[in-house]
Length: 59
Image (cartoon, rainbow, N blue to C red):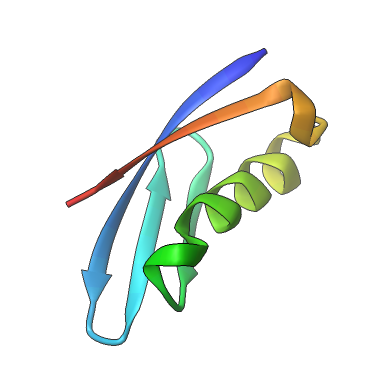
């Protein structure tokens, strides 16, 4: 299983999510951060979602 740490920062009315070594995405609400971070990792690494663990940090 691959592990990643995503950092989310509030930028006005949305959240910017950075996953080092993978990329950056955004979420419209705090409730969407984990899902969007996982979607980013899966899309960029071509890894199955069940093979990925993403820990999120909100700063």
